[in-house]
Length: 362
Ligand SMILES: Nc1ncnc2c1ncn2[C@@H]1O[C@H](COP(=O)(O)OP(=O)(O)O)[C@@H](O)[C@H]1O
Ligand SMILES: [Mg+2]
Image 1 (tube, rainbow, N blue to C red):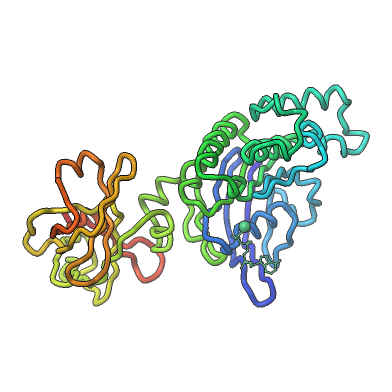
Image 2 (cartoon, rainbow, N blue to C red):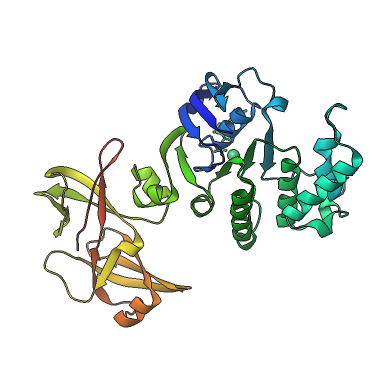
């Protein structure tokens, strides 16, 4: 079922939690709402569910206005960060709950409920836990059971609010892959809230980046990562180095350093250039005026990549460079060495929205 979010605004007292949100979610899509804590993700999710009323705007389910639709009639399944399982019920009874409380006319028979619950337990690969109590499960198992319980009522829309937020990193990673596979199997229209960029990029078909109650960008994981629309998106989606300078005759000027910036504006007296750690080369020799002098202050191997931390000689701060272990080994770098930094790619953003330009400096 598709979801249309149109002109949604929501204030709490004077505080504007959501400022005119517009979003189309296609049937069967898995969309991530990504943004820092307090940006309005949960509020938007609760409005979609009908648990919160917007000040203005409408939510349409499959083109139908839900304004006067009761929560119960929206066919929405929920999974929250904090395990909302009933502690005094077994796993089986937790999943069966939503079916047992249906009005008599639509309530399945006991045999049907049993079959359904076991199907769901198989789906989340935890059939062997049917008779356990929530306290006897690991955090990851509880969240899978919570998902099975949400699916029991055959929701047309699945809303997940930081479902793996309380779990440790390794379990989170497993569960997000598992969720992706499950979604590929079931194709229920799903909205997944997270403040973790890696999680959003790995799980979702499309990512909606929110900041201070506004949408900064909507796009596929590749689009938002490779073509961030705003400095906020750029910085939120990964590590970044900032270089302050100006644009002159189509070149980026950072102190005395001059870098070609094809297609750039002719002139800007003050500009911020952005480069990710893997977009910067470390050179042993200066390349005319096209590299920034720096000293290596730390080197850290992280699995297959190596992170080099450098301090600019012009006292303009720390730069982080990332490269593969092979590249690192061939360069033979040591802590304390003086080297030169050359951005392979720099971005400049327009004052307002929109990526104005990206240029290759190498
Ligand atoms: N019921 C409420 N009353 C007052 N302020 C609220 C209420 N719910 C949320 N807020 C505020 O709205 C903002 C967005 O909250 P929320 O949607 O929970 O953000 P997120 O889920 O992105 O962390 C926060 O600043 C929060 O304090
Ligand atoms: Mg929240």
